[in-house]
Amino acid sequence: MPTELPTVLRRLPRNIFLRGAATLVPPTQERDRSKIPDEYKWDLTPIYPSDQAWRTEKDRLAAELPKLREFQGALASSANRLADALETQSHFDKELTRLYVYASMMSDQDTRVSTYQGMQQEMIQLSATLGTESAFIEPEILQMDNATIARFIAEEPRLDIYRQYLDDIARRRAHTLSNAEEKLLAASSVMASGPSSVFGIFTDADFPYPSVTLSDGKTARLDKAAFALHRASTTREDRQKVMEAFFTALGKYRATIGSMTNSNVQTSVFYAHARKYETSLQASLDGPNIPVSVYSRLVEGVNRNLASFHRYLKLRRRMLAVTELHYYDLYAPLVASVNLSYPVDAAERNILAALAPLGPEYSAGAKRSFTERWIDMYPTEGKHAGAYSNGAAYDVHPYMLLNYNGKYDDMSTLAHELGHTMHSYFSNKTQPYPLSSYTTFVAEVASTFNEALLLDYMLRQIKDDSTRLSLLGNYLESVKGTVFRQTQFAEFELRMHEMVEKGQPLTGDELSKLYSEIVRRYYGHDQGVCIVDDYVANEWAMIPHFYSAFYVFQYATSFTACSALSEKVLARQPGATERYLKFISAGRSRYPIDLLKDAGVDMITDEPLELTVKKMNRVMDEMEKLLDKKETN
Image (cartoon, rainbow, N blue to C red; front, side, top):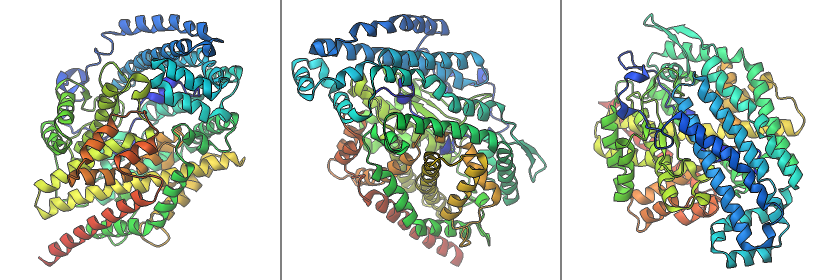
């Protein structure tokens, strides 16, 4: 069915700010983009050689979009006519996506440049136009009976790649509106993107980030990068001061950010009800055909396993040698004496070696990303924070944005984003455009898979107890951040949507109250496991993923799926590698639950989470033995 968000925005991989890739640039590292060697900057000319070439293509596409009207009222006349219409729509979507990719990534090089912000806004408007022009397609298909559609597919081979799309239309028949109503919803997408756009500009450019004086006497301005670095300081006084200052500053704007959040949630609920869904959760999961029980099972399962999470927090308290663990202690290095530093060339060697079990074709594709300028590696002034992979320019190749700072976390993030990139690379070259994009539910499997292979490789290279403790601790950090933290976010997101659906107010104060309640339960505040100070209640205000409805839970489900799949590949289980490569080549040729089941993991059961928790406890067993050994020596 037509989406309320522009089609192009659905296809783009989300940014992954929460991976922790945003870090402060060392004083010796160049921040002037013009002085960074070209080999460490992506080359966007394969998309368009210049802004003028972009403008020419944009104007050409805008002039062609009305051609879709030629098909209105005639889709049921013949299989050939239906195929022509779907191919035309798909072609326009592909070209529009390519235009958006260029504009968005040019903007991400320096978010201060308004020219590219304007180009992105043009693409949102053009995408809304495409949605309006094509709004008749699904209502007309819905007027055709299933027998006619089956006959058309049999008669016209070009329709075969649209088979699942046509099945989806029939499956969602009750939630597709009339032609006029679909046009109205499509046209409203420009307004619907407002809260997310405002949040992004506010937090990236306009928010008055606080400054603090650190224990060494230096002053640090706590933008996203500096906050990510200094909250992990080995000096406890500094990380406490940094976290308190940052979250307190956020709290001063909780009314404003709360209003943005409320508008975004209200939009989500409006579209769900307009399409006759009972809840916005049902509406969000119905697209990729994911049972609501998968979401609820995850939240219930993680709450059921909080004892294992609390075991990790107690282990962290022991390793930091503090009598009372606080929330501001959660990012400090577990083994402060180990300096895990990896320049880009070392990271490349380690990652490529770690990925060798996936075979020569995978390795060759991964190598190209380093040698053919697919990556924008280092932080520079005004550059978009965090890290992401963007594989939406179908006829080109995927790209990666990093803010690399030479730490193990940065190397792990590079491996993570390379997983997304190779997923897009294999899917784009295997599937036709209509089937090439993969759903967000499976998006994090390939990225987390690469992190797992990197950790396994590094542990096989390193025998030093302290370094092994650090790497094993890094795995636990991933479980904390990807399974428990993202599920905590998912529960918060579900609760705030439920509040709106019940007609309850969603102010900044209410959001902070709700967030505090959930985070204190997860971290065992009342049991004294980890003290969650009052200012942490404002943390929700910095999370961009809440502007993509019911997105974050898929980090957790993907991680648990990856735990099962990666161990089978590492154990060289017969057929495991081949099944995995088939999985990352499948795009959206099948529903995500079915794709994962074919790869070897059933997400409708508790097994993926339970296997993850078991591995987590095995890692803690090993770490406790290493600690006992160190303490007795």
